[in-house]
Every structure is written in C-alpha cells, then in structure tokens.
Length: 149
Image (cartoon, rainbow, N blue to C red; front, side):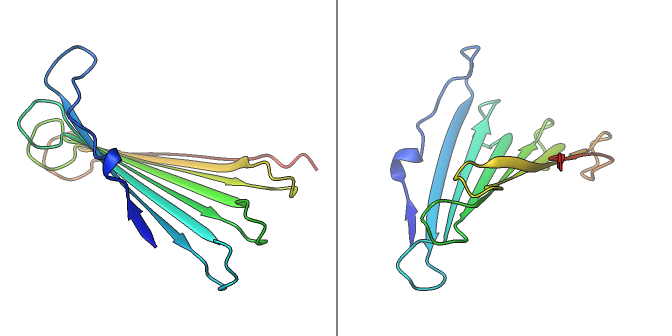
C-alpha cells in the first residue's frame, strides 16, 4: 500500500535571507506485511525536496530521505531503522551535481526493550572540483557503536 500525502507537496518558500528560493517536498509511505499475519513488518517512507536557490525554475539542491523501519518480532514496534539521506547540489547551474553527500544511519533495538540505539553511521561526500561533471574528490567517514562487553 502506497500513500502520497498531497499536503507534503509544499508551497514555494522564501529562503532565510528573503530571496527568491523555493522548495517543493513530495513524500510517500509504503507499508508491507511480509508474512501475511496482519501486522505491518516493514514501513518505508521516501521524501524528496527540491530547492530552487536562484529562481530559474530548476532545483539546485535535491534532498532525498529514505527511512526503512523493520519489525522483526511482530510486536508492532520497529526493531531496526535505517535512514539514508542524499543531498545533491548543483553550484554552477549546469544540471549536474557538483557536491553529492550520502549519509546512512542504522539504529537497532539491541536489548529488546523497544528503545532504538544508533549502531552505525556512514557518510560519503563527493565533490566535482573542476566542474567537468565528474566527482574528483571523495571523503568517507564511518562509525560504529562500541561494544562495552
């Protein structure tokens, strides 16, 4: 089942400095009952926001956020949540992203008490330095929850 909330298709918004930037957001949610027991096992939400910074009608910044929540034990409470956010920025207006940043966060209910703990975070950033449309430099950061046992 997929639902798109038309309320999320935002109206144009001015930027913080009162300029002519506009933002439009569209989102959808999908619920999946994998084993057919009537309890939703996976919920995926996707939200895409396009921001036109220079007012030319083309999104200069596109932010895509995907959230996956998985209920492994069928109690209706997510046991694992993965959030992936991608930001693509076109600085020179050629329609090709000059900066791409992808961040992924994984949280899990480690001890079964219903509380999610961030267990892993990875971020990858690519930059087109010379403006030729290809990523020239990549930076990667990764962190994991330290196990105290």
